[in-house]
Amino acid sequence: MGNSDSSAPAVDDAVDGATADELVAALATAPVRADPYPVYARLRRLAPVHRAPSGMVFLTGYEDCVTLTRSPAFHAQGPQWMDAVNPAWREHPGQVATVESLLFRDPPDHTRLRRLVGGTFTIRRLEALRGDVVRLVGDALDAIADAGGDGSAVNLHEILSATLPISVIGALVGVPSEDWPLLRRWMTAMMQIVEMTTSAQIMDAADDGARRLTDYFAALVAERRAHPREDLASALVAVADDDETLTGTELLQTLILLFMAGVDTMVNHLANGTQALLAHPDQLAALRADPALAPSAVEEMLRYDAPIQIIGRVSGEPVRLGGLDVPAGTLAIGLLGAANRDPARFPDPDAFDITRSPDSIVLSFGGGMHYCLGAPLARLESAEFFPAFLARFPKLALGGVPQRRGLVLRGFSDFPITVV
Image (tube, rainbow, N blue to C red; front, side):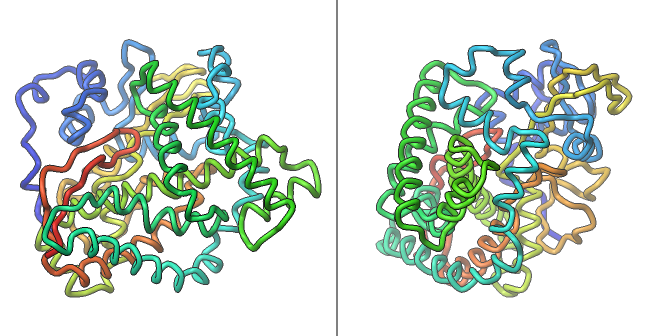
């Protein structure tokens, strides 16, 4: 059994004495971004389903979050809802590219778009990629060794951002490697708008990123239309050209979404998992000694510190959750990071235990019709990465103080490690 994270600060008096409203407000602050789990636990004890002064409802329990992700009573925060709550959203390319994407669509559009790309992420097709993933893991480890071979600290987040996840999804979609650095910068800017707080500066950067990504993928589509290849971009171009089930705008938005989701959240997952292992040396040693533990270790990493912590859904009808009546049109916020540590579902939830029995499905990939298409690919990449990473670097250690970034998308801006 793994130990509770001794490096994490105990729940302080401010959290212990806070009201549910104060805890919800604190979610947007830097200290809680660094360690949200004491706030989640306190909020779950006080009010597992809590209506904030804003009218939004916050869920911290596993079963309530399962209901949120799977019940047809809840809908995505799609264009119609955005028109009602923020009519100016269409003036911002960053919001348009996000809200009109597959991720924020309901049936029938969601069903149609998901069916078009779902075949790319089947277990059978991904197994055929395993050899390529193993090779690309080796390339990423070579980059880490080159950067840290002199004993200096290297930023694991930065190296992973430039190597494994982007190379895997880049090959699938058909994005040339020489274009990755520009795309990374634009993607990072655009993805900030999903966080709980934004600013005019963040919105401007997201809009610029969305314009540039749209222009880039429009050029890629034109090139693939003229010269098709064996990649997802060519396949979707063929669909768009053969019939009217995929519009030109939807084609570009789908390519942007798949590329972004395949990079940022995967980098965050690998970094979060590394942090958990370094904070629990017994678990690191167990995985290093027995690489066959990788699949269960990956599930525990996803549960313990998920790269996606928060989702939002809108009630399409009156719903009762945890004894609270939720009117139609309410924005409900599922705190997936809290649900993954619900003691009613996961015994000793604050312990990191890579041998934990997977009796309950972690909610880190969402659920229901919006369950993450790339979940099998994420599991494949990480199950190949971690054993190879630990075997390659027996002296792996933390090389400084990591800098957290984001809460909705939980990861690091700087994760320093040493490898010799």
